[in-house]
Image 1 (cartoon, rainbow, N blue to C red):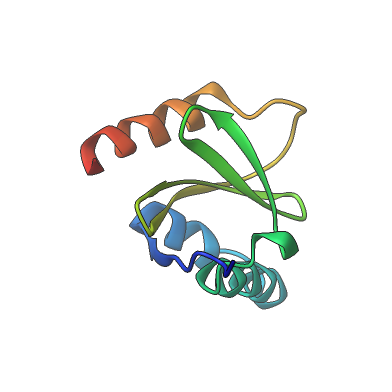
Image 2: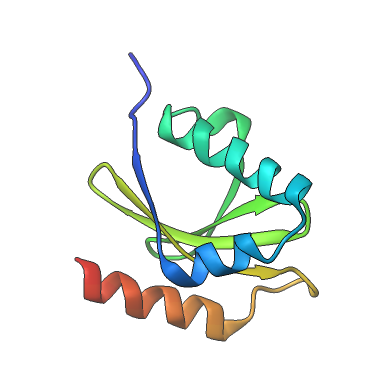
Length: 101
């Protein structure tokens, strides 16, 4: 069985976060996005936050995302500073998910 390939759409808030990072950090995130587009989730670290909302984990950076069919939407990024993902990040991603589906 082959990998499911995803079309990745980086929403504006996620793109602004990625653009604010050092080039090396941007490269690490882009490498994970490329792996996701190829359907290779084995090489990336992700975690379920709530329901359909997940986060891509790259070092101490987190980018919330969800999938609808074969589309993967990167919602918003933030720097991980505590053990728990801020509730506001999960709620924002849920709001965007409801708008998109």
